[in-house]
Amino acid sequence: MTGPHLTDRQPGDQPIVDQDGLVVRDPPVALPEGPSTTAEALAAGVRDHPGHPALGHGDTWLTYAELDARVNAAAGGLATSGLGPGDVVACSLPNRIALVEAFLATQRLGAVWLGVNANLADDEMAWQLDDARATLLVTTLERAAGLPQPPGGRPTLMVDPSNGSGSWSDLVDADHPAPKASIDPHAPAAIAYTSGTTGRPKGAVHSQHNLLWPGISSRRSYPAVPGERHGTALALTILNMLVLGPLWAFLRGTSAYLMDYTDAAGMASEVRARHINRLTLVPAMAHDLVAHPDVTRDDLATLTQTIIGAGHSPATLRDAWAEKFGTRAIVGYGLTEAPTGVTREHVDRPMRPDGAGYPLEPVRVVIVDEDDHPVPDGDTGEVCLAPATDGPWAGVWTPMLGYLGRPEATAEALRGGVLHTGDLGFVDEHGQLVIRGRQTEMILRGGANVYPAEVERVMVDHPGVREVAVLGLPDERLGEVVAAGLVAEAGPWASGDPDLLVEDVRSFCRERLARHKVPDRMLVLDVLPRNAMGKVVKGDLAPAFDVD
Image (cartoon, rainbow, N blue to C red; front, side, top):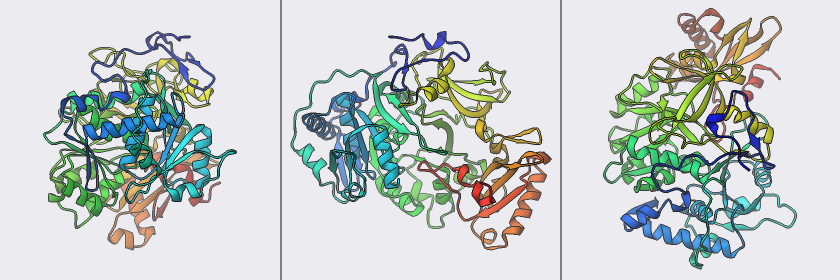
């Protein structure tokens, strides 16, 4: 059974969705370069430079040949245990070599990968495992001990994060031959649970085809530098980080290094000691590196590319980065359903302070109105994503297959043959994307639309504001009022009277924003509530304003 081509869809058309909540569609155009599956991610490296370092952690490095052999043994061991195509293998580990081995092994079997954030509470983790119908769990002994077990139990392989020993290592060391599996690049291959800003998270399902394009397209847009090493500090249980970290490096034939630290001093020491060239950060991490007095330009001298994502990165932060480290930190925009980043700053094109970058080569950005019709450039609407229509990537890109077990949510997100992001934004005269905020976050104050992102970008330019989150609160007269939770910048602002900071920020906003956009209510907080990806959970801010 096949559905109509993406290009044949009309605005609002509902896609065909199967019983698992996944879309039924024609296969897209083949990738312009190999490999065609993540199962083959190491093949070129093994063929071209088998002795080149592929994956490192601590003082341990595996060459392409060594990693390939271990992944084959892992796939053989899993197959001997009865796992095969379609079975879900869950993993909850810190950034360790075993995690990458497990991911690649599932892909070679045609199984489905599920990364589970190690910081989840036991009941949250158990819910994800049950929702995804996980067949096997790879985790630590400590983590496994606290999990409630389903009837009949759940097979579990253990990893000691201090030295890599455990039943996972035993399975690999047994060196069972890997089965010869025929991999469908468009079948379910990985599940990434959304951040869950309200209610239970949704499991976005991706194919192997989906996971390949960031690394393959980067070969031309960001050619590898000699001796390139890509460091990953953010958790690899987040699918985006696997795609932008180890998988990205393997597809480029370079080296991936798994970092242990996310604090500024720790990251800086690892970048310096391990000669890291490329790093992906969230804004808070970049801020900490800039602000830390003991982190110097020499510590990050090896970095040739730093990407800041998963949240708004103010121009002041990027300017401070350039001034301190002498390099440019670039920004982008992406989402779990894409997967990962779809726009990025371009060094040779204009970059506005509130810009989110330009579409990457495989992707086309479409802005639509409430009826799903495209709007003219410069008009604000919902940001949607579609495959490029010309060039080597025409018709190649695909979004997620859908939300596992949620056919209505899948149909809504993929209606009209595009991925509806739920974000509001516009495309400027240069083709750059500007994000205004979430559709559900737009504040209707007295009949006037207020976009939180616009207010946040102004507030964070105040010298006393380190971070800010703007949201709407119910109001009997106006419908909604604008509220802001802010974290003070270190130094006098943080130690001073918070009421004075609020008044100063309000005056600052009045000079730069229309009156109806200036926050009616402000609170100075110690921290902003965040999810596993570092994104602010605005729903958790409302109680601070005594709002149910």
